[in-house]
Image (cartoon, rainbow, N blue to C red):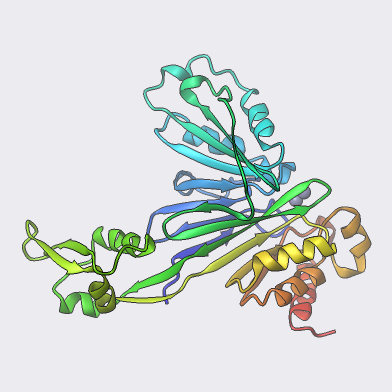
Length: 335
Ligand SMILES: [Zn+2]
Ligand SMILES: [Zn+2]
């Protein structure tokens, strides 16, 4: 199966956390955490449609200005999600600049902000045309764990304890559609934008007996009609989708463990912080962070296929092997 989600940590393990997830077939991306983002190219940043911020400690939110600078003047809407207090945090950032001329821009850039509470979501929009003044917030109830549902994927969240609320995120592809190129050729079809429409029809759960039309490769003016279910059996292999989970800045408490394991369950890839070694677990607890041992233990408890640790304390500079070895031992339950 050729994966469609390509996750990559944007910085080294001692630098600011952040996970960039590219949707390779759709030319767009999402971002978990918004610390230092200078390692991302402008091109990569401009592909981002949604940013999910775990909490607003500086190392997770200082990249907001670069993002804003790049998007300003473009006809786009960027959606940002964050924990309790997030609307005020964004408002404060925006209030740090003068906006007397932006309402004359031809293009209209807007920020859609969602603040996540245990029982509700609060939306607020800031738009360039309105000089980035907060528009009237809208409250939506109830809210449990699903934050966003797109045609092909779902984002879930858990609210963890980091002294302040800190969010963890998981993206789950609903299912994965692989196109059999040899069958396309046998039908005389060519790869084109219609493949995305075909996948979207499947993700939307359209009636298999409904008609799906494709332009004939040899006679581009002509449309060929297929029954969706028949076409799907002919040209597609459907397998379970990818799941990627991102957890950082959380204390190893009973309540957090339950939420983290639940969110990360059966992930294909878990990205989890490992700020300290287990010998320093008192410091980790004091600072509401995880140790490498705890990170590996969580990966094992959640039954993830693969995991990567990050967000190392600078006290372990040149000793990252110790953190990795400890997390690996915990994952394989080697004492
Ligand atoms: Zn933090
Ligand atoms: Zn942090």
